[in-house]
Length: 182
Length: 182
DNA sequence: TCAATTAATGAACTTAGTGTTGATTTTCAA
DNA sequence: TTGAAAATCAACACTAAGTTCATTAATTGA
Image (tube, rainbow over all chains, first blue to last red; front, side, top):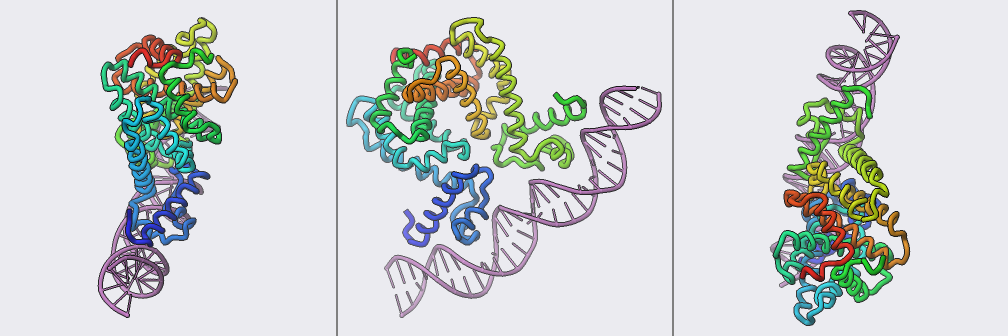
């Protein structure tokens, strides 16, 4: 964490402004000039912290995934069930960062956020179940993309379910499919 | 389809060039200038056809999804099985457009392609199984994202399986989950 | 094959955002 | 309170965007 209060305040303000602007328009049409004007921060100051809009975007991502990793690691081995060790804390963390996640996963976001989330889930599932056949690999991809779909739909329908309910639902569909619901 | 041969040739060349450049770098860093130089086409000519790089990108997408829709509609009701009526023709069409799909779904692509593909699959699944509870809605999102995951992994691992094999695999994991494979 | 039409080119131009610099002011931590 | 460092401000050169218009080349259909 940055020591100097000025640095903390500047970065926080720029971050809030970027997320706020992303609610209205796509990351690809956002300029450094616009962010700085809305944040009322000198454009030169922006360049003291970030190379460009995408560099800033990536730094926010990195921050987010480091936090996520720290949270999930703390749940290590307290229980045997997937839903307790991985799914429930995952959904809880996403709920805490709801606004951020919604814009990042939306059509205004960048493909790299979704891909990093997928990559992260992939690492987790391989760590738990190992890496065997190419067929199993296909299933892993199905499941991790599927979870991102669940997450996206959950966040965009006012998170009516609790993280715990979502974890149960996710575990069920991962393991048993949707046959019984059709 | 455009009548004038000059128009057809110009657009085809620009399309090939864009896809080729996207193999090396992300859409967000590609300029009109670069495309035109690589295609050896006057920059002014580009603006006769497209507003900007993203407008071009969107037009290619639209073309692609119109074709996909036409293909899938032709399989209507020939069989009762999901894998025959939807999955097999879907995988076949994607295989035919492999190069295009790989770059569009890659980290060099734009989020809008993935989202349009998801949107399209969503419409299909709702058409087949209807729209009931919010719980079922969650499952739909799980399944359609899951399919995109399967597609992405399949295309990026040299499409070792046939479209028919992928259709069977997809149907199985959608309906029954992955319990038996762990 | 010819004539009318229309697409593509080339050059010029304005506009807008980028990224950097250096001097100056403000804020911070110790 | 003071020295250090962050933020500001104005100025700068640079690059790509997007438009205009006169000119050249290619196409279609009669």
